[in-house]
Image (cartoon, rainbow, N blue to C red; front, side, top):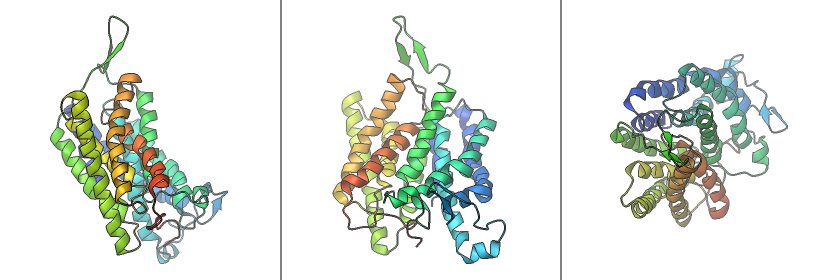
Length: 338
């Protein structure tokens, strides 16, 4: 399910951008996973999940994936590898949409290798090391499935990338009075974008539910993973309808994803009221952040990746502290090695 989310990201990003860039975007999404896999083998998996941790910050890559495969497999690490790899690939692919239509392919391949080998494994180990050795784990930091670990990190990388590459040609023009006008550059297929959104939502049940430790927890996670994005989408529809005079289809699709991102950290530890509030805030937050970045700061993010993943990843992480009930799981299976 989480692997299939790569398809969802590819459809969202290609649908929300111009047709001439579709091949480039599909190739980048494909290579995120295909480059990320050997990088995770060579270095990333060991940095993230090693039991030998240096000051709670970085693991020593001595798990034996290359040097002692029999011991590696007997310890159950083969399934752990695949499980963690698909999450790593998700973090890497968030950046693609924000930098769409003006990123050199060779440079993107290098980025994909670095984030999969070093960036994601180090910061994810702070929260999800199986031995509980990460410094954030030791502070009882709660991020059940990745609002901070995956989406805030991927969204921040997307923001930095969009700033570095600059806007697409024609995106911003200067008026006679010196002010800057933001010109809409429509994506070529809202249908593909919608298909990608539905694929991502479906895949998110695996994304959030895979670490559940019992059936009751899994059912609660599924419920919250449905309530939050649905609420976010309704609130965004009403918000854009009032603000713009009509509902914004693209923004409502992004609101569904924003609600999913925000509920990811607390999906196992909040109740229905918490999920409703988290979703409602997400539906407004995504629109506000996308518009502020575009019209105030003139940062060109064709698919709204920063608003969806960074802003709502931060909000979802904070929301755990506001709405966790204490009745469900507050940490995922990574924390205790189960």
